[in-house]
Image (tube, rainbow, N blue to C red; front, side):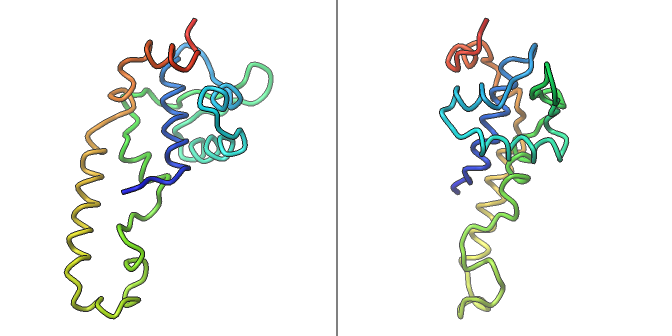
Length: 144
């Protein structure tokens, strides 16, 4: 399964912020660290703020921070939020769009595969994937 760029950027933003829990991050810092568009990150921060994953603080001294502890942020939930309805193949988007739909044996197999994919992600939190905060911070140039 291939994740959308929006999901990729969401996970990167969360990893960045989890790597520096003692201070707020900015969209500009994250954009530089990953060499990605500030415009895209603005959309990401807005969406993650709306669902209570990020705290977006405006004004002087503002920035972004996690609204929850990394151990409370489930990776599977983040991917579900940012990906929307998971479908393994385009032909599953609307029932009956394919002539084989009534007898297709592929659909249940791929539905199981998607369920297994999310089952793995559901077992992990942001804390699990950022246990090496110091190394992440050094790689992103945010240490110190």
